[in-house]
Length: 312
Image 1 (cartoon, rainbow, N blue to C red):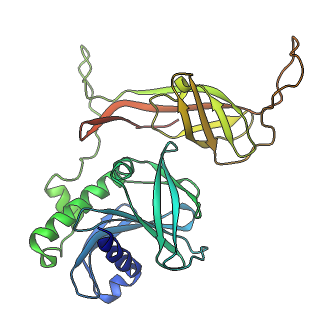
Image 2 (tube, rainbow, N blue to C red):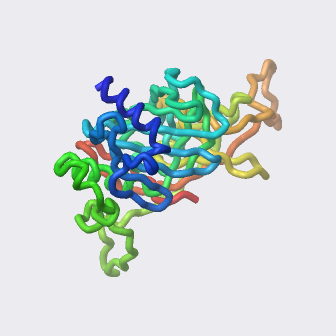
């Protein structure tokens, strides 16, 4: 698997030259994503199916799958100055909550790539946003159509493995729609008045509050406030705009949760060194938190997870 990973790294390094080098077969055009099936410039063998999108902040995000079904993700930014072949560890957070270890390798001065674990791959498939922390850091990046894209990439790999690169000169998005591999667009259908369809998703909004406990953006709240929410958590100080937060740690038994905002705060809570008197109030920043989550669920290999639909 490691040798295969090295091959994927080498091929992705040449992705920007794929169109002119003639190594791309077929096409994937889905929303902001663009790509296809790519072959190794070294021996012409099928290397992977991939698509790239430009996202906010000037980042380029690539999602790829190789013939061995390994999923890889690369991210690039024009301001980076990486040392090619340098290896480092990153943390990738999806939807402000689910955080995964992401070993990465610099393949150019501007781009790094890593192999996604199985759990990270499934979380990415349904993610609406992601952020990277560690040696490389990004702002929260909005993701569009990732579930549909990964279905198309699955189909691309299936087709090339079955028929070789000669079978890859197709529009994979159109082929996916034709074969029903791509989820159909959502439609609003009025349910009969006497009963509600069990498949109709119900969006529930939740809100709560928390206390800022560090200038680095850490916030303490109750576990029940964030329980079962996989959507993006956002909070705001009184009179200020909302900011996104991720879950750092959660303790259901003691009903506590530690969050971290993508910003700093001026007045974290401190422990009083004197007695509390009636009428006293704290000087710490206090956040109001809110989100909504969908009570529908996806099932993957026997594991069900709540699925975010909308956020207010």
